Length: 282
Image (cartoon, rainbow, N blue to C red; front, side, top):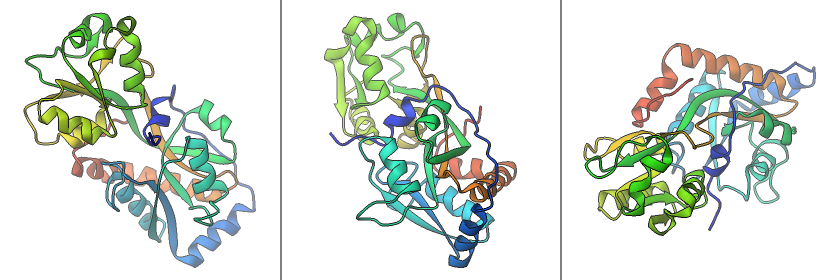
């Protein structure tokens, strides 16, 4: 199964906004970008509601950031590699032998000090979302996902729950209750597939990042969609930001300032709201 772009975010252990200094060579890159008149923004393909077929939260945010810098946005969609280190290499600091030069900035990168240290060729910064694990469920059959997993999830020894394969939700559910839930975990290629099965009553619940569940089930009042507040679940939340090349300090500073303005004036929250996702910022 092709690695999902979601998986790296689900391994995030903490959020940290990284700061930077400004070497002189960064000015040359900014001059080149302004001369070009376009900000090249890399986004994952097939990742609703964040980026899918040229639309989504990350696409709109990339365009808004470019506009703040007086630039047009050139949206570059790409397929996830085997791990996010590959994605950063191909899209941020080196480029790809087929695609050519990297983008100027990549969206939806985990803002995590451990991950950043392992990928020092990229500068990771600019948190614009705090994501949490969520559950969508048939409330009359499935209790709220709170407290001890041993109690809250025991129902899935009898009821089926859907997950996207090879994700934190998949790993977590397969490991709790000494593996007793495994027979009732139904795997799908995407969160969209899992939520469609929920709508068709093939599963009684879906576990996935809350933002993806909110967007997939927006306006459908048949299901409860909420944060999974389970004591054994780690991480409980993770920060999402962006990345540029390690020495692109002026660009990082400009993007950080633009993001702060867009957060302050409500643009970021409005973008999330248009896609049915609540913006969690802390």
